[in-house]
Image (cartoon, rainbow, N blue to C red; front, side):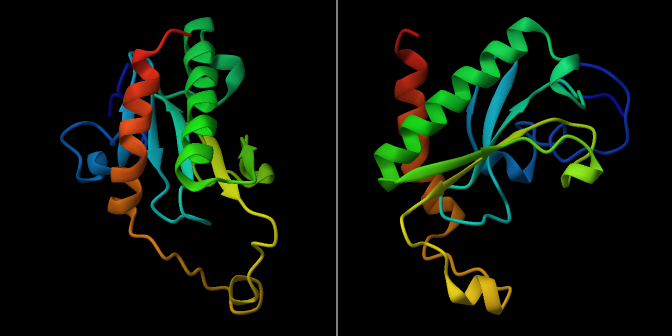
Length: 155
């Protein structure tokens, strides 16, 4: 199989998130080299990921252009999550490799999880269950216009 920008690999959920994919409705914005997508299994409302289109397994394999876009979209995600959800903080993380907890091993991506003071919930801690008051489609409808606005603004 060939990735979005090139390279051969087994099926990859990030490479398969193209415009013809059923997951495309979760994509918030696309740039030439990267995109932002909602996490299908979020820890909190607004949990999203910034992903390079090219199938690469590490930041070391990224081009300068990819790194620049990934960071720009991560900044835009911070702005959007604070604006839409009034997040008190945001966990930003990259898990490189199985030992680091990567769920998708060979396609690097950046997680952004909005947080609020006192948001640790006994249900998720004790019952290993997540309670999300907002549907992913609602989340996309709230965040997408912010990303579109930010993409049009100068850097």
